[in-house]
Image (tube, rainbow, N blue to C red; front, side, top):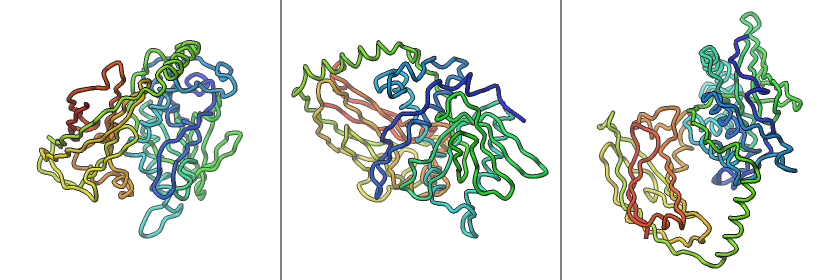
Length: 379
């Protein structure tokens, strides 16, 4: 029974995953609401495990009726950020492609059952044998409308009976704090059955990409401090009600870089967002780029920002790029991206305190060694 030195009671949160939030706007489906922040909580647990730091000892009773830290609390905000990080990995596309794939498969495509038992169980065993707990993406959905019902957990052990081909995976499920849960599947079974009180059944699972981040030092800040901060924010919002700042953001130029494979080219599309406005490059389709390719944007975006708010500017791979490939991001292969890093993403925040970022900016996308550089100005 190979296991790492990890247990839900010792290394997991002492409150359940009762968060509710909107994660994405899926074309043709609408707003996707996840059943909590399972990925964020799982990644946060792994971050503390990797850093050999204990989790903040908050209990559900510390947070009133909701049982989770409110938005604005350092721990809630960090969990939310890690939730987003869990979706900005190359493997996260499997939440979509596996949800659309059949269980058994056919001569055109391998099914979820074989992919889990032949490919992913092997990855899990190798990680556990190296002493590394890993995040798993659990699949239950069968179409895009059910994406929010998929789940994320932490696996820290396994069993495999060579004779019967019976498989068992030991997991920490953030929905069931403090409990050791198993996922089991027999030789001829398609589903994986959880030993949790809910007895959930999952079509399959995959090992998610994960790169540790050092947890912020203030996650254990007492709740009263977060409440005081929230009161200050509300007071400032009331005081500055009706006072808005007109800001012009000009996206000037893109430069692509791929020093390891400078002659390789690929079709690519990006999205840049300024506040709630989104600019796609190119406006339609894709553009062939390689190391050194430059693109002149000259795109102005006008936004009005309340004095108490922040101006958020970011970039990411265009959504239809993600949906075009069933096993990965072929259009981004030439970037030689590490499987454990964010892909083509950046985000910058500016407030009244820093004059809304007025001036010229040059930002490099995360991931790499390849990626892009965006030059823009704020006035």
